[in-house]
Image (cartoon, rainbow, N blue to C red; front, side, top):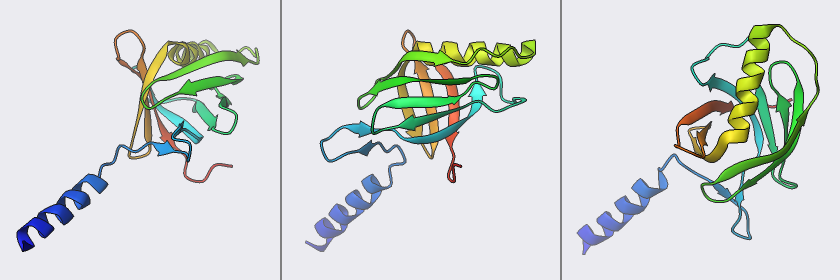
Length: 143
């Protein structure tokens, strides 16, 4: 009997340590919120100005910066799927390397089909082949 209790307690302890967590509201809907700073965009891992995206769960909107221009839009998600829509941005001109980052960032958002959050890192995957589009780290103390 003791072994069964120990086994059950161990099972619950191990399953509670799963690092892949989704925040689910009281209605059972998945929530994504907060500011995420891009750490990887394709093969690029260093940026003159770090792109970021902020999620606002209440109205399912996003805002952020591509490294050059500010942007805003909408998002929709369920347990695993994530899509962005109605993305608009300012239209400042920046040096070509910064514009290349912006173009890659916007393309990543437009091609996102699913996501994963592990250890505070948001990973966006392509809707066509599930390749990694970008990785971003959640800011723990956003301004």
